[in-house]
Length: 61
Image (cartoon, rainbow, N blue to C red; front, top):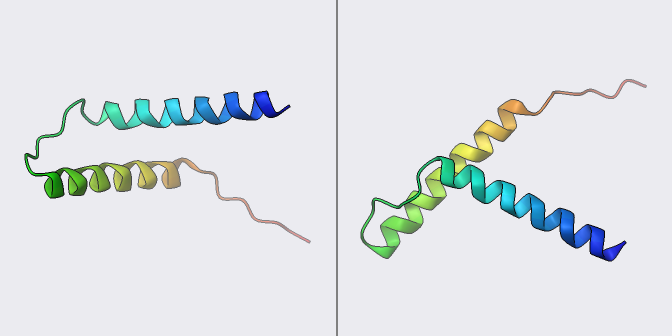
């Protein structure tokens, strides 16, 4: 069971890295601080896309 959990979590990481690379293979910023900011911007975009794609569910009593 533990092996299955590790495999599925590894697959999630691979999927997320694929999504990040879809936004561009290389960083255009030269300085390290600018590169960090560029990565943060890409992650913010991906988080927003994920939020938009998630269905809105409501629990009714």
